[in-house]
Length: 174
Image (tube, rainbow, N blue to C red; front, side):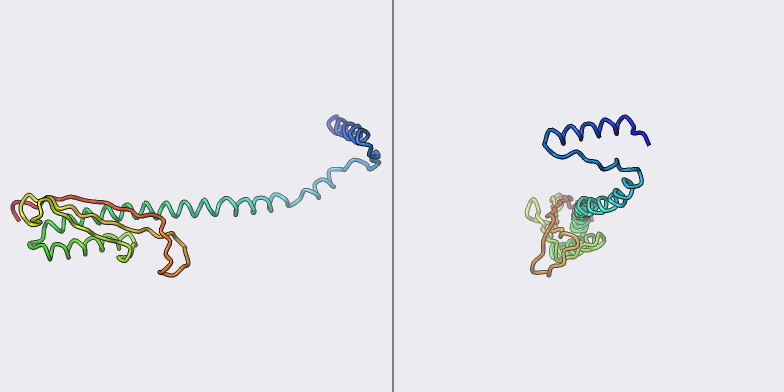
């Protein structure tokens, strides 16, 4: 079978290189297509599997973590807004604080975040929180844990701390 021009050039370069290095010339016939196909069979599957594990697993974990942080951001914004609205609707400061904390925890639970990871704080300007025209600011902070971390509660790894505030005015008429 005659050699193609590419194979002929390749064999000539190999012969000259072997001669320049002082190696004996090869007498083996050029490999046919069947030998080359058997030698290269199956390597793409191994390479793809290795690269897929090496590259895709961290990428998927990063996307899941960013989704958890974004979900936590949505949760604290909704919780702060609802807590501020509930706070200004209550008749006295003690029940207003309890109702605001309860509303924030319910809003966080709707997004799947436990109450242990959240903190609700309230501030008023001026200091009389139930006086008409008072600006009540509720701030909700949430620790977003890393997903799929199999450690106990004492050794908790957090992906991020997210925080949101909402301000409502106490109305003149209730």
